[in-house]
Amino acid sequence: MRSFPAIDSRSWEHPADRAALNAMRALPGFDEVVRKVLGAFGERGIRHLFLANAVRVGPQQRPKLDALYTEVLATFDVSDRPELYVTQTPFANAAAVGFDRPFIVVNSGTLALLDRDEQRFVLAHEVGHVLSGHTTYTTIALLLLQLGLGGLPFLAGVALLPFQLALLEWYRKAEFSADRAGLLGTQDLRPAAGTMLKFAGGGGGDDPIDIDAFLAQAAEYETQGNAWDAVLKALNTAFRDHPFATIRAAELQRWAQGAEYPRILEGAYVKRGDPRPPLEDDVAAAAGYYGDQVRSAMAGMGETIDRAKRAFEDAFRGATGSR
Image 1 (tube, rainbow, N blue to C red):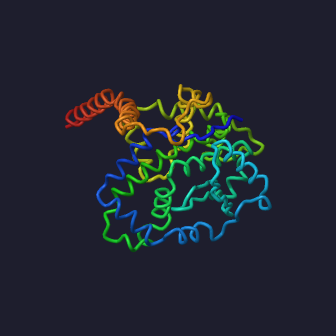
Image 2: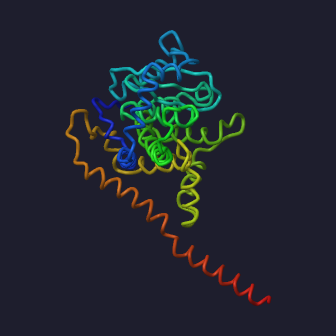
Image 3: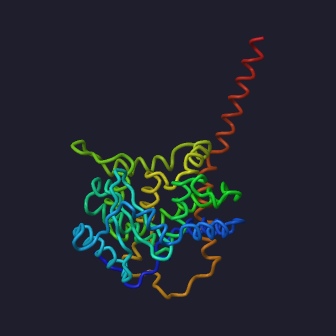
């Protein structure tokens, strides 16, 4: 297993993650929402909320998981160890949350569902969130999703829908970044894809499941359909905190097969302390990504409009002919 001394999170961050974050920060009232949430909960309140029914992992508490976590932290050259907790929850999920002192919470359902390499992927994914500085906004997103406006009376009067949509858009794109960190933590696409397969459809038990078939399904979801299908996909994901597992698998497979991932494995990556590139470089990269998405979505638009026009004309002719 390769390690990455002094690696900076910019090495794996997805351009759409940075673009969505910049768009969210530019929203009127964004700073006010963040300030009110931080003031209402604080670090102590967040730890009470997320850790009231969780067990801290350590050398005496789940030592195998603790050792695996230590390996993941060493891979990313992390010396300031975020606390790791397990909570008794049957649903497969995990999160990195907190404001000043981020921590990671893994649901017991995740550990029961995944094998060791897949657990490594999840831990590396969450460490990626921490190193990318995602946890403040992730925590706010989870509060909005779990508690809603009724549980956040101090936000009454704030126009939250634009903020909520922008926050969830960023959250989904941040998952792409963290998935890349997960792949760097495993250095094997199969447990990464296997994790997403199991998150989507559960474990196979005594009935085999096939990672290659799942990756083919992911590619099919991305490439098939027309412009209207693209609209439906956008509507289906607008209020989700995570992208669909098939989309995540396809996005990660594309990165693994590109030029950037192999270069990182060879030691060519951004290191902590390296100068930050100009903001316009981020903007250009993000524009390229979103441009590709838009071009893909619009590719079938002309055909879709023509079909709709023909269907309308046929229906009109049928209606007038029956008089």
